[in-house]
Image (cartoon, rainbow, N blue to C red; front, side, top):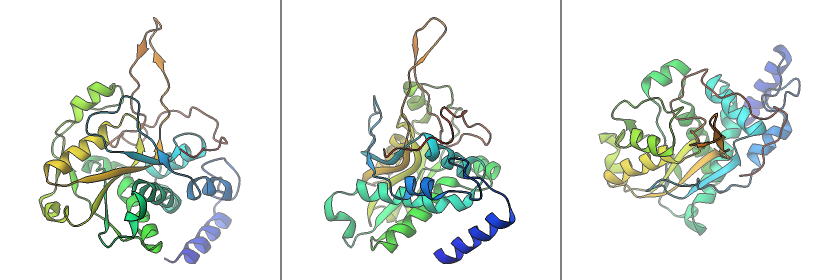
Length: 273
C-alpha cells in the first residue's frame, strides 16, 4: 500500500472503530500527530549502556524507552498493533543513519540491516516477528532517502536460553553466550555490505553483544548497532536496601503479556535519546 493509501485506511478505521492514541490516550486515532512526531522527528544519539559488555558495538537510539515511545513499542510488539511499524521503522531508520559515520551512508556498498532474532515459539505466540517487521520498515525508509539498504535476517538461535527477566547483566551474558549463530545461506553475504545490528530496545547490551559475536565468528564485521529506544536504568534494591542488578526490561524473547507495568503516565512524552 502507498503512504496515502495507508493514511486513508487508518482514517477509515478510526471512524469505524473508536480508538485512542496508544501513546497518550488522545481520542479517535491509534497514534496522534504529537506522538508520531516524537518518533519520526527524533534526534538519535549514542546510547551505550552502563557497564557495557565486551564486544558491544557502538549503539545509537532514536528515543528513550519511556512515555509515549514505550507505549507505542509495547503496543506493536505485545499487542500486534502492526500499523505502528511505519513510525517505529522511521525512528529506527534515523538511528541507523546516525550510526553510519560521515558520508558512508551514500556509498555504493549497501547497509545490511541484521535484526536480532526471536525464537520460533515466540513468533508463533505473538503472531508476528516485531523486530523483523521494524527492520523492513526501516529499510524502506532508508531506500526512499536514497540510502542503499536491505534486510539480512542472518542470525538465528542455535540453542535454548533461560528466561532473562530476572537476570543481571553478568548472568545475562553467560546465559546468551554462544546462543546465536549465522544461517549458512547468509554467510557469503556478510562481506557484501556494511552490517548494522538492529533491535527495538537496548538496556544492558548483552543481546546485541551476542549478535555481534556470532556475526564476527562467521566473518562479518559489524559497523554499529541501531535501536528504536534505549532504557534509562533505574537502581533497584532488595528489602535490606542493597542494590540489585538491573534486568533488561524487554528481552528479545519476552513472551506475550510479559511486559513490565508502565513506570510513567501514558500521556508523558518521549524525549530524544
